[in-house]
Length: 64
Image (cartoon, rainbow, N blue to C red):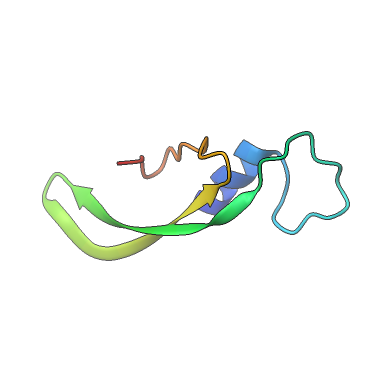
C-alpha cells in the first residue's frame, strides 16, 4: 500500500522508463520503522518508501 502511495505522490510507476517525468523527484529506497499503536509498540518492522526531496508524507503510517 505504501508503494502505491509513493506512485500516486510521484505520478509515475516504479521502473517506468517510457513516461516523461514532470519532476526530478525519484524514489530513494526505504526506511524501516517500528509501528506504535495505542496499545504500545508492535515488534514489526515496516519498510516505508522514501523520495529524494523528502516530500513524501505517507497517510497509512505517518512520519515520526
